[in-house]
Image (cartoon, rainbow, N blue to C red; front, side, top):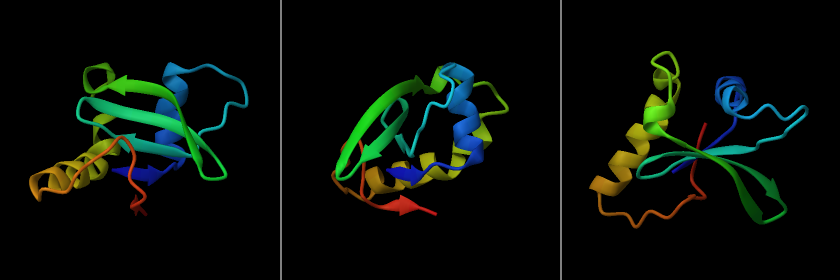
Length: 89
């Protein structure tokens, strides 16, 4: 389950990656955490994987809706890959 990156997601990404001007376009929920990546045309490149346990308590609410959508998709029997084309806006 994926989402377009917003200021909150980007802020968390930069807590773990210190690249100046580093660009991320999406965040995706996975079974054990979250993946951040960049899109180039129709190619998605995963740049960073953050496990659920790595998040600080104040980061967890930012990912709540994304995690809920991922869990619902799995519960409903939808085959879930690393990244979905469905985006939460």
